[in-house]
View: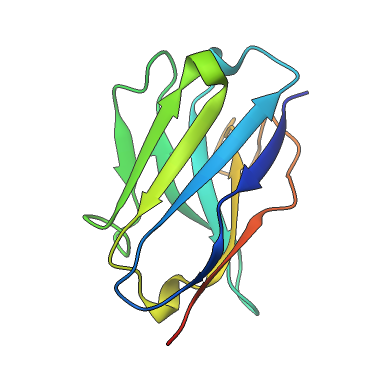
Length: 120
């Protein structure tokens, strides 16, 4: 089963930027579509961005991050990235990555996530 390790979170002021990384191990990374999710305190986990397999030709974003976040992948490094610009306080959450099998099931185990806090 694929396992993930998310890094790159931190405290940033509104309007700032962060780049998250998700390293995968345990399987053939390139065959999986990948996605970033986030969970804020008291809220359900939500899909943030997704990217197709095999080089990532297609991407999709939640309306709330469209135009501010960019998902990308490097299959040679078994890593998927999330570049986050123009961050807002409402982006504060723990961010996770996984390989979606369907809208509610996943190929991988959830990692620890990485905390992103947007505050002045």
